[in-house]
Length: 70
Image (tube, rainbow, N blue to C red; front, side, top):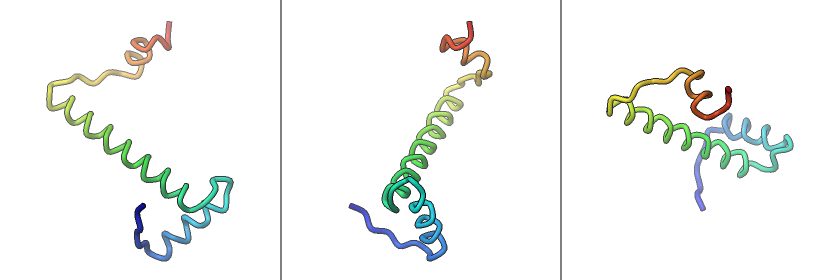
C-alpha cells in the first residue's frame, strides 16, 4: 500500500476521471503510474540501444519485421 499527498487541483482532476466508467481514484492513479513506469522503461531501453550503437528503424521496417505488412 502506498499513501501520497497531492495538490488539491490534481486530486480533483483524478476524482473527475474516477467518476467516469474507470471505477475509482485508486484505479485512475494505478493506471497512470503503470503507464509512467512503462514509458520510463521504454526510454531506458532506447537510451541503452542508442549507447550500444543501435540503429533506429523506420515504422515500415518494424511492421515488415513483425509480419504486419506482407
